[in-house]
Image 1 (cartoon, rainbow, N blue to C red):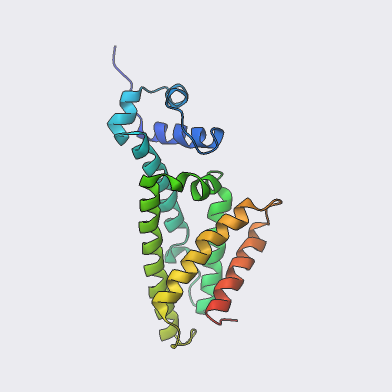
Image 2: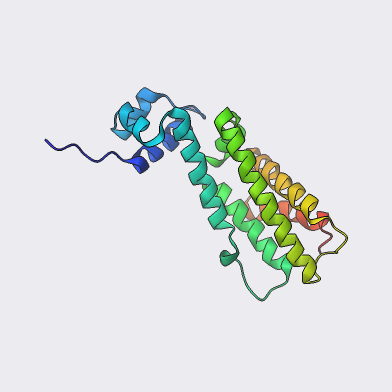
Length: 192
């Protein structure tokens, strides 16, 4: 009898569901039951339970990067308008993923993920600084603003700001949360 192919995505989907049901924790017995796969499949694809969590986070972060990429934004508009749209995409992505709040509050405290998130935030801050420099070259942002510092501060504000917006009860609408976050960014860069 031929064995069914071992499914990496099947395990990722099961892990996401387990994290939601377990309030940020994955029980291996439940994971096996939910995925229909053995512990061996987990170790084959991810090396460990921690490796599975890393893959869940990487998948989430890759989706975020795609959601806020330059090719998703309007062209031919001022820097501020384009970045307002990017901020809205950022909020949309987080609000649409039921795992976002757990990933940002509980799951990233796992040592393997804390380091991974730190690297992800560094890359986002570098991209933000580059983007701010583009706004400075275009004359939309004051050249006196330190782009590297502003990029790091803005990414930090977005990271912890979205965490705050996700945990509010009642949760604000996507439009309200995006407007609140944009106000912080625009204020930091003195954009109106």
